[in-house]
Structure formats: structure tokens, C-alpha cells
Image (cartoon, rainbow, N blue to C red; front, side):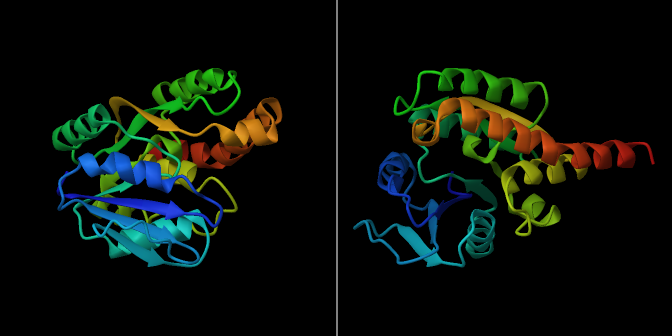
Length: 223
């Protein structure tokens, strides 16, 4: 894990990063942890974390963190994620075994939203394992070299920069690899915006965004 730089974009209203930082204390002291804020830097009293600022936008913030990172591998985590020691060990083993892959986790929701989010966990598993399309809340990790090769997160996209990154990786011939462990994320947005409406919205948006990328993948394959 000493070769992995962890990048955490922090939105203006995100307030759960402290819990994630507590989880990451299990890492070696040399592990680089970069928090990319789009506003005022919030100090936590922990000196091992690097705080930097950038313009607002998850893609912009993650790309800014990647440019500042010193590690050979980049691990992108959302601020409301929670990791376990088992998950850290699983990622380390996966990266060592398949250094050229894009690694991700199984998605697990906290108990802070509707019970129906268990269906979203199952849907994320199907989407990832059968369609090869994990999303950013599943904790992407890849080499800095491959990240640069595919151009980083698309800053022009109005949404789904994580989804597009996966397509760019696949189009570049980069394999996807699940590390086999769970990454826990908050389900509060489903409680706030309504499980049914938000689930339908997300399904429509990713399918709409996937269609032209699938066309490019198939077109390039048969050229």
C-alpha cells in the first residue's frame, strides 16, 4: 500500500470524510492520502493527510489529486465511503497480482437509507460482474501510467465521469478486476430524494451514456 496514493474529492456539503480517514489509519504511515477540497480546507488534526484545493467538480478534483500524487497507483475514494482492514488487504493483493488492471470493490450500502437499497447492491453486482461497468463509489484503483493513458476523468461530462472512465479503460484494452471485498457507502441520498425516483433516474442516465461508448468499443474492435 506504500505505492498507492489515495485521492478523496470533497464536495462543499460533504461531512463524512472524518470516518473514512479514521478507517485509513490502518495503512502504513508512508501511504499518501490526498484530500481535494473545492472550498475552505477543513483541518482534522491529522498531519499525515495532504489537503489541496481545486475548482469544484468531482472529475476536476480527482484529476487535480492525480496530478499531485506521488504514488505508482491511484485509489479514488468518495468521502462517504468506509473501508475495512479486509478490504485494504484485498486491494493490495489484487494490485500486486494484476498491476495493469482497473480494480474495484463490491458495493455495500450503510444502514442510513431505505431497505430497498439492498436491490441497488444486487444491481451494482450484476452491472459490474456481467456488464463490466462498475461505478466510482466502488473505489477505482489503477496505475498512474494507465490513468494518464486514458486521459483521466472527463471534465467535460455533465455527469457520469466515473462511468466514462471505465469505458475509456475498456476501449484502451485495460482489464477490470474486482478485488473481492466490499466497499461501504452511504445511502442517505436515496432517503433524501426517494429510492424509486433516484434509482430510475440513475438507470436511465447510465444507459443513455453507455450507448455511444458501446458503439465505439464495438467499432474499434472490428476495424
